Image (cartoon, rainbow, N blue to C red; front, side):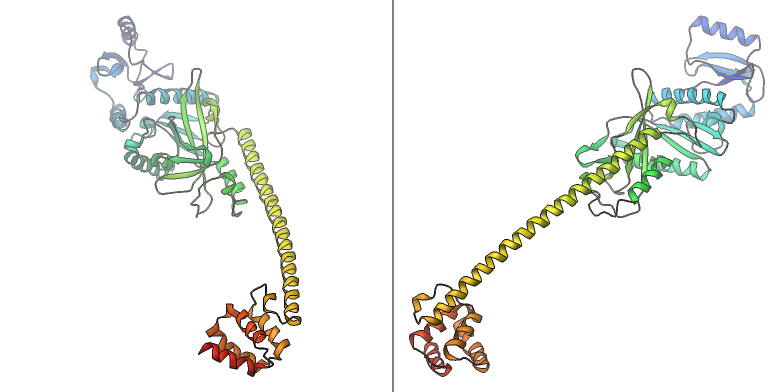
Length: 427
């Protein structure tokens, strides 16, 4: 944790937490020469050292000014707020603060301070407060995120996030990078509740919104990416910023996703594999922090669009192939139907020309039977109705051959002859 600040040559400086005996003695000698002063009341400060607080500044006779007492109380509340964080948290806060202080010296319109110092009367503190000409930012670093306390942490983060927004300050969250729950084959990321709560909305996210909104009406949009969607709401691309230390430097991993499931498991559509940028680039100022690389984002959007176009072309080609296959099948079926019709026609003609039962090589349909009876015994419309309603239900429509056999076997000349034999058969 950063120790109490002092002023020397109008510059705010901090003491290290620990020091050697000689270093402590030297700092105390410098303090006696009255070169350290309180940044709030300008009173001269002395240097103290103890096991609990380490090396720190104090007003003489421990009579701190009211402003210092307020800051001290705020610091204690802040320490309690970050009790759950890992040791890396303090390191990351210091690194970010140092980076921003360097930028503030170049950009005079930028002001940087520790959150609890600048907003000491707040109930929730950001780790770092940044003021720009048109915007105030609340930077918070979250470490030690895990499934065990995720639900509790998520509630704390939501509360803090909403508190900052209500204070008119834009929250910016960095998450200690751990193993991400990514289903690569499904273009899916499973988010913890805490991650979903602090996802950001930036200009780059809005550009993704526009791209996806223009494409998502395609019913196969998610199928192109093998994503198991439950999507039923407006397009809302969000981003997460994971921070971690490499052997050489601190980097930020930018991860963008399309918000989808809002109930556990919190599955979201992963737009791409994400990318890493140097920490200094992430904190570049452009109406807030850049938090991205515009060239990489543009390339990713191009790749995303190209994949959609490619999948759409493949779908169209497949549909053309299926349509051609369907046409060929229909043509083949039509040829087969025509061939069967011609064959049946020939058989029916043979049946009419030859009074031979053994010539029946097909099962007659009822319509074919009617045709044969019209030719053979001059069956009328009225007689057809009687045959249909009185005899065929008992004989069975699939047994039309039986009726024709009766006609041939008994050399029936008319329907009356046929009726006699049908009635005998059905007795």
